[in-house]
Image (cartoon, rainbow, N blue to C red; front, side, top):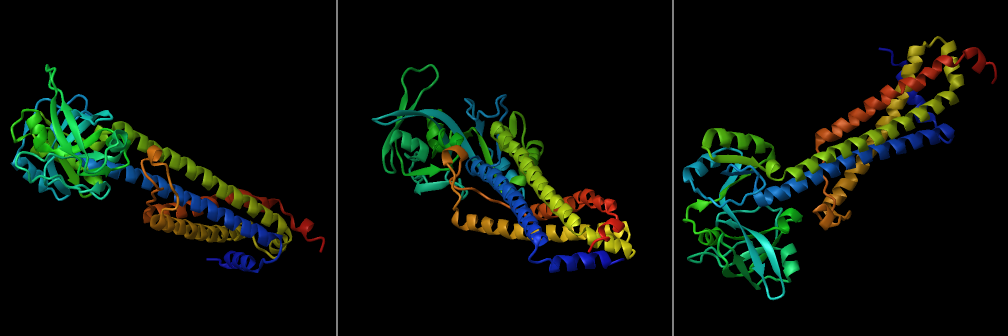
Length: 411
């Protein structure tokens, strides 16, 4: 292997100080660093945003729902119950990626306070139900399941509480309308806590109560439910879990729904964020390539006499081309390293202090989430370096047009 082109490129890079070419080099390094940092931060923000939104949904509804088949998968409210099957729960619970399996009931109702009235969907949960850390609580996280008949409590979202002007410890009235009846069934419940997910689709529409309350309201037996909520240790197993449960453990009319089916519009919207990521990557990679190509072309023109001298001394075109490609690779590598340092610094500062804020009503979160994986960092760094070096082939072709007899005739 001929190390001469690399030796000249490295020595030339180290010795160029205090002149125009040194300024061009510094400018190229800075521009490359900014481009790489923006690409890394864009991927981190989009990945973090998608993961945060999904986790908020999973924290409230789990990953898979087992219920009667329905044409409209997004509607979990059914008038006909299914019978709680302990054996089915045990079979699902034995899957290695399943964290918990809990029954639930969903029933519409009306919350009334002296000042206002609000329609709501009540999600009835059992005592063993556990939320993840993505659900924030003001007050107690648990209903008083110790009461003999049912917990006379309801957990509202902070969004619903704000609209109704209700605080922790207040009492509200719940109205339930039965089909064919003109008189509502009324229950008075205390508000022991408020929950907050930041997801408007959940916070605006749902409240939590004892599953036994809804069984009574529906005139169902104690073992009647709407379905089972399956929480997984890892969302990556969501489709696998739904398929295994459906094929191995359930019988018609039971069916398995993933959160992607229940919240199809939201997951489709999250999928569109990948297009934004590709656009940002394309733009910033183009900026890095164009900047480096222009810088390299300027350096080639400035060093025309050096090129002529090397050619006169016997260096062929391929070696001179490799010399400037090595030169471009050195500049790109330093810029990529600096961009990584800048992006990682901002990443950890945001993770620790959350100084970049968001409007939660619009973005479902209070601060910009970031999630960056080593594979993404390696892919962006290698992709940028390879793309920059490959795109440098065009400007180095200018070397062919440099004639030693013309550039060396004047000192």
